[in-house]
Image (cartoon, rainbow, N blue to C red):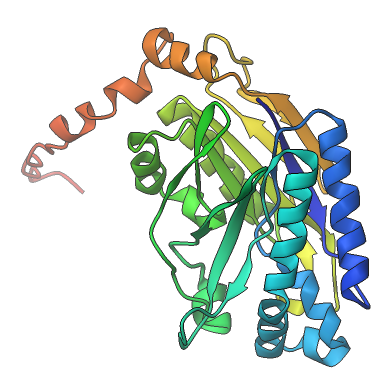
Length: 299
């Protein structure tokens, strides 16, 4: 399966037609490169806040509500593109108020060539989401089928917690999609290192799609740092660096690479190391010996 990860910028839109034209260009570009699975970033849907005008987009709460208001239309646009191009798309995540909930969740929807496959909500919120935005955790993790591969989604900060990814892998995931939104090099590095670690320890492929560029009209996501990339285990059948493909830093575009499900299965069965198989041995080793008593001359 050919997989594409977007390094995606937020743009100002005066109307939904402008947003639709942008999505059309981006999906057509990736599909034209042979991509069958496309991954867009976390909070990419916040560019819909621009449809409410400058004052709305600049306000934390009003911007969330405006983006959420246009979500059904945005999902319909992305779903139609998936059908038209015969591809699977993890759409950009954004806020959703569901069932009269007090606060929104951060949700990414997975669109398939035959219709919507489902959605994934973020599980663990960053400090900004907790303390400033009051975006809350959503529904449980899920595993989805996309062609010959089974995949799970760990949105940004979620990728920094290994047990979430491990639960997805134990449920059958071979591909981990990691949409992200980070405003600093340090934040991007945390997610990148998390994605690479998850690919290593689970002997799978992680697909990292970040927001890039500046959008000063929307303060919560006014700066995006990072590079889109696909990471695998640095082992047999994969690059020695673990990097299958990557975009230049902070540059819009697609990182595209072939992901072979058989390569994932082979490395799990007969890799130089067998992290995936040996994971349960950790539990047997979580015994810490009592500390030796300090001597009289010890500091």
